[in-house]
Length: 172
Image (cartoon, rainbow, N blue to C red; front, side, top):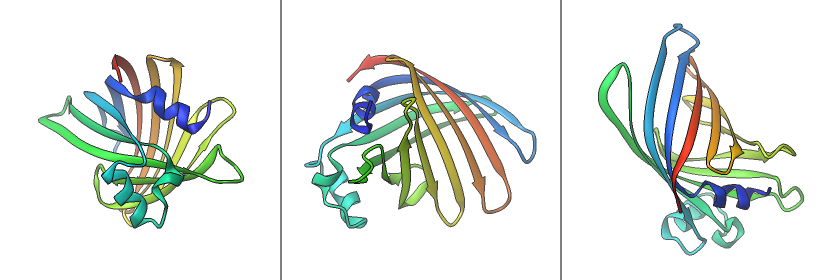
């Protein structure tokens, strides 16, 4: 599987269950959310703007994700809603690796990280900003069952690890 196939397989509406462990304090939280992933083509204005900010021709990227989520965590009755755009830009010499552009999510600024698609079809994404570094791994057990883990280290010393299982409810 290549990065474009991975992105295409991700399109649809997903139900996500997650466990988040604060490794600094020991606190543990569970949550759930509805996650919608729509594919973006190079002609999409949001994808083009994000590419432009990072000096990338939109046609070089080829595709991207527009993610929206709406969920809750057990310890907080407030809904957690948000959206983000992710755009992979493959390395010419190593097409299973490249830059990952991100806009939205918990960061107001756009970010440029990197990704690698392993021989086991596990996508690993690394992102970094002034306030955190993150490593996220995503893979499929079946086309409608995706797993995701992440470790985020914040500049204030806090480290958070999470595990998500995501079940596709509706395709594209």
